[in-house]
Length: 526
Ligand SMILES: *Cc1c(COP(=O)(O)O)cnc(C)c1O
Image 1 (cartoon, rainbow, N blue to C red):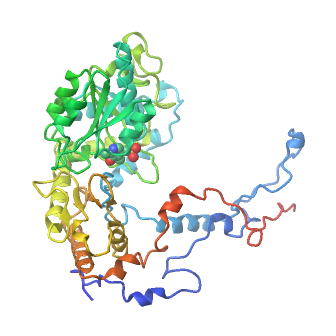
Image 2 (image 1 turned 30 degrees about the vertical axis):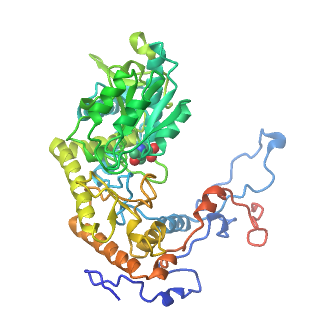
Image 3 (image 1 turned 120 degrees about the vertical axis):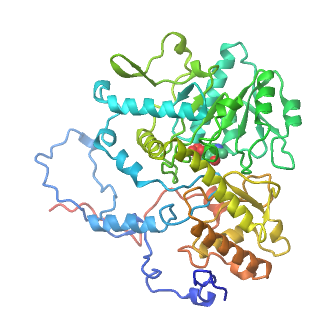
């Protein structure tokens, strides 16, 4: 058995032992958990309600005659149910979460504390503006710093995710082309390595998507871009640093060629973490770029949100930005809901209100607590950490682009697994047994069996060492032919290997009582 440098065995105690089944389905102190509907508590409630004073109903024959079928749990039961469920999931608060392209970084508790201040946390979106001046000032300040950090003159704050921001940016571009009599431009160019949301967004807006090839060193192929630019092209969408974790060295040339062809340069800024404080996308010729506050500025994400994807815009696109936005005059701050004059070209709105206030507060707290030197150090440390991983793992695994440094994420391919009968997926599953959440797998698509590792700047050298050591030992086991360890993994997770395709294609999204196991009793009339 190999030992980790911290003295822990890297191999599950003895694989045979893990076939031990407990009577209860629990694993140690981690309990098995039924669905809330299966918990046999139909006749219970956690609160003691006085009988209604008059129960005459105006609903006539619409009055419910059968029980509604909601599970009944006492407060401690409800509490435990959700805490147990939370323990079955991985979280950045538990351990390293090296999911490339996702920037799973620590969300400082200061952010949480500030977001919970009553003046922010308890606001209603329809509260009169006279009572929400502080919140509007915060949106205005955050907008100011986003424009400053990106070197762009305008920002749309209301999009609620990165993909939502992409949609906002492309709708601005579409509106700008239409206003200039260029509505016939129906194509968007996207590199082969793009995040899936880029072509999806372009298609959603009604554009046809044409791929741009990639060079052998993982960058946009400029010759191919030049060949595909035409009077039909509305925009290009380029991620920088790109999803191979590499800086697009020719980004200025990309912008120049794009503008020369009358198209706009959309930059996917989800990876701003790698360059914040070091590079201003506005200086690179970018026209629109979304920023994932839930990545770069540490606000929580996962489980589908909430996120925030403000979009910075060039002067050419600014007049088309969606309402609402904050302005200030002698009388204070105002949210402009109905654009007038030049601003009346706004393409519409992205959401009912002003955006994700809770994320704004967290991101602003993060910016202020880091300061400009701290934000620059975020980018420097994120890149340093990724390069440390790339350097330490390059002997055991094969970096997809060995030449030169990477940016904030280290990308490996599966060449080093050749002949082992072990796949990227098997390797990732074995990482779970070692207490490490897998990296992003099989993305970007242009790299065979891709393993994309993003440590972020919030991990210490000790944690990176622990991670690299575990992966090195696992890689040695793979090359030594210990196939079972990988094919059967995870051995120690609450559920073993799932049929992910089936789960994605035929998800079971509704629960139906199985007559034998559950029988909601009629509501007891006392
Ligand atoms: C995360 C990400 C997105 C999408 O952001 P969401 O907030 O998940 O919609 C888009 N592009 C890149 C490169 C990303 O990493």
